[in-house]
Length: 280
Image (cartoon, helix red, strand yellow):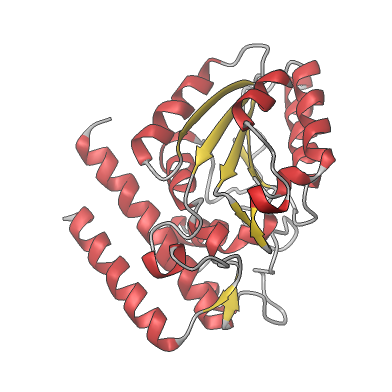
């Protein structure tokens, strides 16, 4: 990857983090840890890999994102707002009465959201069904599925993986956010899942593990999924929950946190300085 493109995507990821904390600060608290951990993959998806039309969010031949861990909606919303799917200031209405930005992703409310999610596990089946539908219609688009490692406790996740492999859905890319923490603790303490790479491969997916907070590593892994074929892809994203904001990353129970005025001022200043440096 050229240095200029890498910096552009890193700046995009920083803006996603900034938008995420702006939304959560305006609401007072929210799902910050798992939103921050996926900022880098969202930057690569929307900044390099996916085809979409901001002016026509329901374009039939677009690539689609299913954020099965729907509580990470603030990061998705920050991405879409940065791209212009809706006004940026609308981020401050997160989870308020009448908002288009509910706590969990809702395709009927938010321009640019491709699938309603939030009941953990169900997004995996929905993504597999969308990929199968597109394949049967002969479309060349792809479906990108973000699923959490804690979410993988749900049996439905593995049923969907088995289904995707059986239906030879080479247009499905599973992005497993392995940030090692879930709602009430570390995943290895709550329910150890073992080797995600071996498990996904055993279910029939072409699987790699990469540093999910490294723009270049994520981009390279996604490039390899462009070839399609008869096998769904899985990229295990080795991430840090709260990545990009040290205070959050270093807080053990960071699934959902309040964001005070003082924290917001410090974090936004740091992110704005990072953005300025990257954008030159």
